[in-house]
Image (cartoon, rainbow, N blue to C red; front, side, top):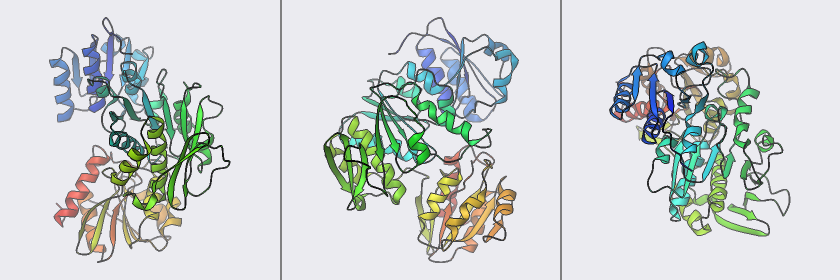
Length: 459
């Protein structure tokens, strides 16, 4: 339940959407606030001005360590990794640091459905919100998906459900965050530019289960061994979703395919047919799995099978996730900017049915691009490598795939793709890298790609 923060002094690191929302929430509940951002963009300056107008203290272009040291705790925006240099400063070493979702959860008067995993979590989060709303249930999505959880905590009236996408960085610092329903979509190496190894990354994902109880409901990927077993012996009811295999027993709770239909079982002895997979507007086996996970969560949250079916028939993929942008001169341009790791790009490439010009690059995250090679055959006609990762991509793929390095900025990459593509081809932006070498975020990258594709030339 929400509580007063009167008398507390709280620091906020980062003044993007989540940091600003956390500052507003804290001020609204009576706390004193010092918020800071190492950057000094127009957006950060505007956010700082908002904080000051509400009675808080804020600055951009750096952090006042003395002011941070005077705080009772520091709220960390999700865009700032736990390894950020400011967090290593001796002056603030004794100040507790919590992620924004932990802070917001303390003030959130609504049950939580939490979704994490390496890939698919944005789609599953958006799907659950859509399915619940299709059945008349007031659900709102937030967390890593775009709307800060602190925004949801300020919402009046309170939602019936908060559907929260959780990154590994956000989960790393949680203590009280307790989802009523939790989903682990899958696991694959990611963020190896920040973590010392994949096991450290998986350990942060496993924190989803730290507050598990007998009342918890966990929806797990039965066909991803690591995702299925990461939960260990945490209490709660387990439900498994699967696309390629059948339930292991008649008592297994979860979701699966039968004769092309999505089936779910959320209580013993009661199996329900939801919808034919062919009726989904999101394509690919990975999206059937996403639909099953979301359907299970929605059913557990009180939605009817009829409402879930109606929602699945009308749901369309989130922006920047295998999103067709335009078909021009016989070439289909597809925005998959959300694919910021190798596993996600592999899923995208496997789904291609046209000869594909693949735009690969950005800020390198520590994975080997050779992992993509098994999926290239018969699909990828050219790889255009760009950004900070370009030398690594070329080094990994040269001699094994048709790869070309393109220097001079993102617009030149799109222009080169237009030169290489022929009628009947597809140009796929599925970078397998983060966007931060050239763009603010993956949305910014996807929007620029779509703009250039529609304009028909480089800007």
